Amino acid sequence: MAFPGIGASDTILLFLPDRTSPDATWIAKTEAAYPGLTVRSIPQADPETGKLRDVNDLPAEVWDGVTILVSLWPPRTTETAVDGKTVAATTSLSKLRFVQVPSAGADRWIAHETFKRPDVTISTGNGTHAPQIAEWVIGTWLMARHHFLTYAGHMAKGDSWSHRLEQMGEDSTGTRIGILGYGAIGRQVARLATAFGMEVYAYTRSERATAESRADPDTFCLPGTGDVEGALPAKWFHGSSPDAINNFLSQDLDLLVVATPLTAATTKLLSKAQFETLDKARSAPKRKTYVVNIARGKVIDTDALLQALHTGQIAGAALDVTDPEPLPEDHALWKAPNVFIAPHVSWQSGHMRERLLAVLDVNLERLHAGKPLVNVLNKEFHY
Image (cartoon, rainbow, N blue to C red; front, top):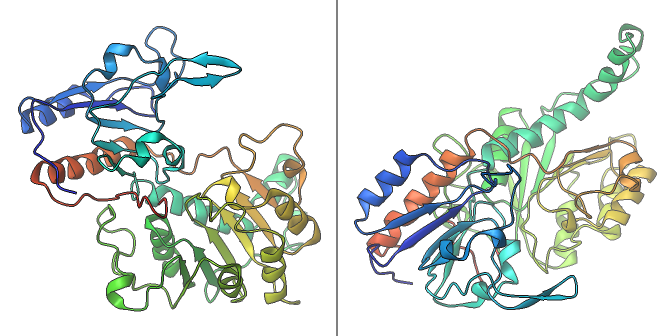
């Protein structure tokens, strides 16, 4: 889609998932680059109470004339029912033409009416989270392989030495990692895994039979990271059917990384049959597959995961996301064997803001020049 240049008719509203606003230097630089442009930056933390607020709590005047929105959450654009009460729309967003979502996934926007508008383009924060999430993936893998949590428990009791030969640690050289969803995060995971001597198998929805199709030039990528050319995987798999997924899972994987977007097609993508496939592919005396989920909790069927953990179908799991989320205090998953659960924090990094603004800078430049944007959300496949 072609866009007119950015100018006096444009207003950017920044509502970032943070407690502070971008500094005045960035705002001044951006407004100077596009004469007439107005930038409004609203911190998510209420300046009076310090509490994080909902996007729908913003004053009505903040939305006036907004054409470019940077927000993790979509505002109410129609009258709706909340807790049995009719709630008015927050804004119409009638002038909106571009949304920059800070997260890698845009599942919060898929059901929103803005998503359906052909005159609105939505881009994600894909690539801004890849370094830190990839480190979280590899960190939890190393934690499991070298029994860090076990030794931490012994340390708390003042006794590690007498347990030092109870479990043998394992290195990663010569192991195989399967990456289910080979986007920006998956590509950086592959880069780190390759450095450890692991063999990479990649899975994508569409076929990537040629070198050109395996490249990913339209996703934001920090210099020195990722796999832009798609050269790291030893094998590629593709498809959307259960048989295609199961074929990938049957490839004798030591580590399975779940990095798919959440869509109707990927909801409960890994269920009972898939865990059975992983189990059968790694018969004794080999170790079972270790599963790491940094996608969305609903990509994995929680009941099937619980069964897989309790019956030893998998070696264990590291979950930065769960279904439900947040996980209730009395949920059975907390006490399942060989599971590590984090509160959806793998994306966190002190560099998040600068990276997101870097993506926004790229897209503003391209908007102004009428060029294709980066990280554009595919409205057919929802990623």
